Image 1 (cartoon, rainbow, N blue to C red):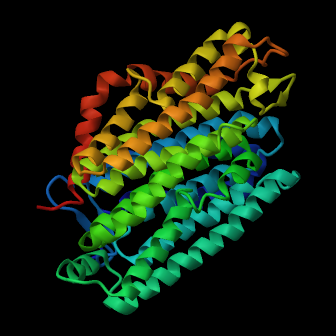
Image 2: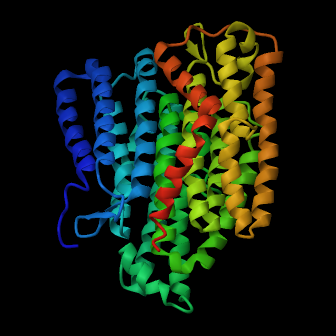
Image 3: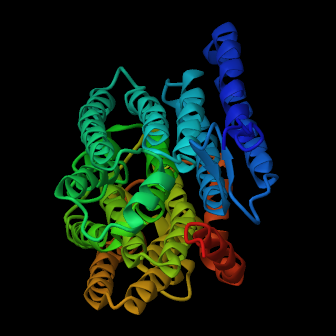
Length: 481
């Protein structure tokens, strides 16, 4: 326990040192090296994945920095998923940044530093390291949201995200301080031990847990802490929005899961009520609020809120089956989301970006392959079998049913049916409305992301068992025998 065990934190150390080196390279070469630094950032993330897979967590978790940092199968699964999402987001940003005049070398560096924060979040083993990782991620994301300083929308998005993010951080710290005051420890192992034998938790501890959950719920944009999401998604540059919707969501929901299951497993009946309410509210708002949207990025914002609600169904079950279902759901959510934003990045007419759903009119006639890919992704998001999105929803709903949470599962199914309406509406616009103006040629970098997303959505069914087995093994590390 007393040793540093730097080997367990080698991927994070590698990313941190590489980010500092790339910062010096960028300061020396200037903005003309934006694409080079972006490619190197992707290489750094790829090496981090390889280093992470080389850490032996098959038998017992690896602890580092006197127990403040933990690496287990759960952490490896979530980190690999977050790193893949971050790499794809950096790749998607190149052409857009160069075309829109925001090709600054700081952009991929900020995304790399945010990814480092995500990795620290996922491996946090106490409330202090949790906060440090969370703020490292958040501070980088605040800047990326407002990186287009010459546009009002981007500046407004960054300001809203910063103000509300500061509020959520305050709530999280207040909750952590109350938990420390009533339990006397901030380590997850200490909290688990102290709470496992408690017959009746104190009111102050419950209040602290509520504040902690509120702060974490903001990071995953769960209702009622979702208010920043539509405006930030619409105002931020589209590649940044794609980044927001994928990698940070994986890290935040993995952190949420570790905190509740690992540290507060002894209070499962108490936090289940919170997750139940948040999940129901997120699914319903994501389903109904998206119906009236006309901007495709705002539509995806509400879709993201709804998808987080579905993932929380697995967490609400509070079982290994529920957590494995949550991990599987996030693994299929990431490629679907990145594919959707690749289509949005391809929405250019006469050199100008367009974002209205109506602008997709007649896409099936002008660019049929792009329409077919987007339709497949939307059908998968709606949970239509045999696409892979159906199995993600099936696994979290099955976990809820097995725990007797029938109301939660039924509400999830109803919300899924309602959300299918606005997905099908977009497909109807692409296939049955008359084209107004054809889209410009799709960038080659986007074609790679689109093809990868389509492959996961359509033929991902062939790899369900290996992915499910990995998710089950990852979830089992949070539930020691």
